[in-house]
Image: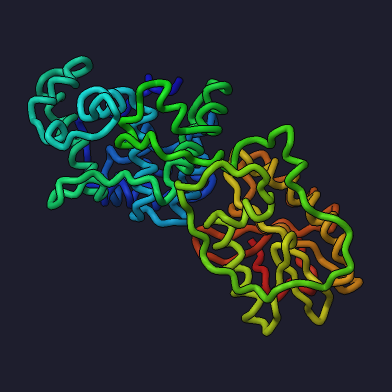
Length: 399
């Protein structure tokens, strides 16, 4: 289990410096480039701290575009949900922080005791690993993190780890990417609360034992996932003009027995933001983007129809998401041919560009007459490195 690869607890630049360092990361960025950026712009210690607490590094020295960075992109780094995920990731990966919370701050039911959080003598807990002076800094730096991220409200003397925004599910996915043991990884993903309860780690949730979370979306397909695919040939022309609202998350949901796979994907904010960005480009050309219960987007142009499948993704599931999307595009083109013109272009819009070693997927998609596109993290534009058909030339840029 993750927990032995620790970052320094005695160095703690202002949270704004750590945030700026994280926000400077772009897909495929080398860790060395982040070091160079931080020395010039934020703090020389920041890359080491954020990498040990929050980031996933590839063997080639690049920074993986993982679920945590996807959350930062979708929600913003200062949002309460993101802050809670950051706290959980740090505690999951660093047993010193995890044990400090669960063994010293929280009571036997996992409920935080604010007096213990404020008690200066609790620095002694860190002397298991550090000298007295360093232990004092470690306790102070953790407290400072909680204050600067607004997880601890000094005026109200309250810790804000409420589960009703669904943060724990996101945190479980982010933490699971750092878990080398596949059995523990599956256990964490399937029921985060039970996972923590079995290890006496409910203190990480401020005693959130009574909330039952439904199993979360980004785990590997289960043996019964085909039962959730609801597509059959249809002559219905039902579709809606795209005007979807921002999805909301809740940690209070009970377990879902039969979840629509398409609806489940659309419930993620990163998926919605990708749709919204493409809709903006389509509407700017005077076109009308539409969707139905299965198709993410489709629209007609003077040069033919465009059928779109949108996929949120990370470096570690880019290929599997690509495979799912290819299957869906061909299936939907067949099932909904009555909605489309005889000449139809297929567009696969991914959250990020293909990670290193997967660039060939652009050409592979093109061989099937699918345009693989993504959103630039710098310009925010949607584009591709493939040849663009006439139906999309005014919508897609070239990278």
